Image: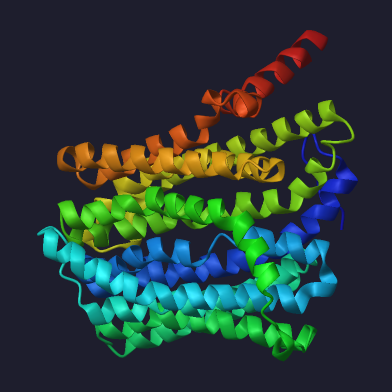
Amino acid sequence: MKIPSLPGFNPEAFEKYFKNTGWLLMARVGALFLKMLVTAIALPNYLGAELNGALNYPLVYVSFFLAISGLGLDTFITRELIKYPEKRTEILGTSFGLRVISGILMIPIIILSFMGLREISQNMPDTPLLHLGIVSLICVFQSLFIIDNVFQSTVQGKQIMKVQVGGNSLSALFKILLIFFNAPLISFIIMLSLDVIILSLGYVWLYQIKYTDINKWKFNPEIAKNLLKKSWPLAFSALFVTLYMKIDQMMIAAMIDKTALGIYTPAISISEAWYFVPMAIITSLFPAIIRLRDQNIAHFKKRMQNLYDLMVWMGFIVAIITSILTPFLYDLLYIDEYAEGANVLVIHIWAGIFISLSLANGQYLLAEGYTKIMLIRSLIGALINTILNFYWIPIYGIQGAAFATVVAYACSAFFGLLIPKIREQSLMMLQSLLLFPFIIRNLKLLRKD
């Protein structure tokens, strides 16, 4: 079947890379449907806003430490596997060892930091340490996610699809059964960690079928040193990204209550659910684009402009459609106490435009080795989001948090305008946001007519 191309991209190259993207999209579309049906709709309605907030708060808190425990390794693991496929067992063994060690270290840090914050702040939500401890195990369980990098490095999206769709289907089935049998909150807390275990076991099963050498993984100190040297800026960048993506939820729980968090969380889950689409497209298209950098710089810039255009158009289309449908969907799918979440979703969905642009630009920064700029950009976004939430949540409530997130994402995306060596790419992003390439193309067509 002939796959339609996109304006500005070579049809043959686009078709080649879209085939891999297609598998990734299929996997995530299946996972998205199940997740939205159960986690963002059925479960919140079953628990109610207050208990839904109690369920999500431990995960929000632990997510900051999850970012650190990942050590920023994922991108470099894939790159090393592509460059040195004969060292696969050592690269994976070393990465797994590093992730397990960091995950184990995070567990007491999570518990002790929460206890300390609760002692010095009266605004900390009253979350049982048992809940926090159970969810913190994810830091260790997610270590096996490095297997995903093997299949990314060998362009085997179809294999990834099997694990993700199967794992999410099984997880959704368990949650439906828990709802059917009127399970208590602690059961769903356990499911947060069990979700990760299911996916991890799926990756192990898949790896064993394909390579059968997981028992040969070895820890190599030299490889460990090399990976950590390269990845530490990305580890902190991941932390700051998590900070400005999750700080709104933390501050809502602290400045309002867990009921407000329970209303806010489903809206954010729906708003962020489609972010895998730009990421999958960028992951598949960018290798072809970056190869042009050393061959034809003008052609490379044109392709980057095309990519930014695509990100903006996707963001606008998703935001407009969601803004129109949200009031009707909330009336249809949610109980009355979630009504305010509709306004949050209508605001927050526009952040997707800036997220898509940042994802595309982030691949460029990574290819150029500008990891420290990525770190600073993430820090700027985190600071802006924190400050705006501090002022806007008391005034506008959870809608203020959504506004703050959109502004923070926009500022982070265009932070490069202040940095001379990446300003050109930021100006290209701004042109795409203002639809200049689209306007210019249509003006040329009008002149020809």
